[in-house]
Length: 369
Image (cartoon, one colour):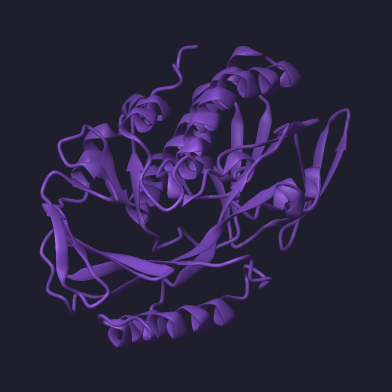
């Protein structure tokens, strides 16, 4: 039985672990955080990704967790409504679509609960070194003892440690898209009921949606900026930057600024894509944002993670012990799908992609290809 170490316990990693276990592999998931990560924006499961969730037997449960928006308002910088829709929202698209919008933390919990019984999870640890030879990959950990695995998969996000160790510095592959995004929770001080609000003021703007039966708000604040040069792990500096930027907003700036200052789940990072000529090197390969992050501007990061996990496991399952053939087939099948989804973030910067492009991106791959 081949052993596979998967770095990253978000969505892509556990889904890959599920399918590898299904194909007879022995997966281990290592996650830097001490437990499942909370917080995050609402994410979308679209097109062929819905089929992955259905094949896992989780479609009904995922559907029960979906957000229940009635529509949205678009506001001017002073908070006056200038447009509204009861047919679609910016976060999820058409409200009558079969696509599912869920909070990221709910999807993480659902997948973890589905996989935890049969898969080894190592929380509170991370990879520090990879040393490959003909027999496998020796992996050093920050806290646990070194171990050797047949294969290693980096599913550890935009700032992937596995990618850095196996392929080189992030700067070679990251392409800044001209903005930053912050996501955090707040009390529902606007008394919103299943209704979103979106506002843009100059080079900044935000979307606000109620969650948890309207008891809480999830705020997504974006602002245009060249690369700031801050270490992505320097949360205090990024938080203060967001607090100050929100304080300058004309409508509800002070309350949003205070919420960002206090939020226990505060997140902020650059909007960027990862573009690589090759996702695999030796026994190591990359999955999801680590190899082909489309950025949240595409709305397809979660779907890419789900589909990529299924396809990678399928290719490995079909190849026996020949990981080179499996990795090559994985790239061959996934690259057109990745290209179509990354284009959603770049074809119309600052605005929504065309409906035709979204439809194509959602379905540009067959799971049985």
